Length: 127
Image 1 (cartoon, rainbow, N blue to C red):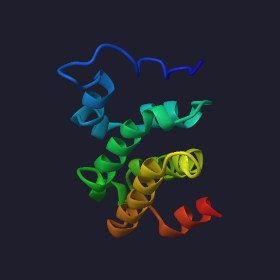
Image 2 (cartoon, rainbow, N blue to C red):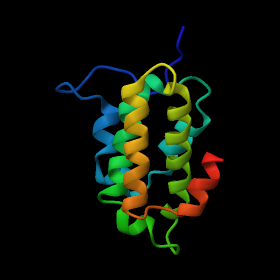
Image 3 (cartoon, rainbow, N blue to C red):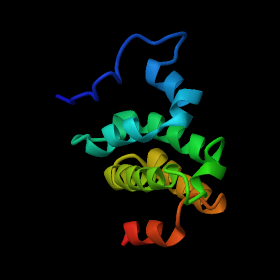
C-alpha cells in the first residue's frame, strides 16, 4: 500500500488539492523550504505526486526565478532540493512512465534555460 505524504491528501477544493493551491501561493514563494524537505525525506515513490513536483518547478522558473539566482538569499539552497526531486522522479519513471520521464527532462531544460541554481551542481547530481 502506497503511503501518502502527511497533509498531501484530502478533499479537492474546486478540483484542486490544498497542496496545489499552497504551491501556487505567495506563502510558498515566501518560504518553500518546509514542503521541499517533506518531499526530500519522503521514502516512497514520488510518482503519485509528480504533478505537485512539476508545480514546484514552475514556481522556480516563474516567480522564484530571480530570487533563486541570488546567492545572498536562502532560496538558492532550495534549488538543490528541486533538482534532487526531479532527478529522483526521473529515476522512478524512466522504465515505466515515459510521459512523466519526458516532463522531467523538459523541466531540467527549463531550469537550465532560466539559469536556476548552479548548472555544475545539477550536472553533478546526474552523475
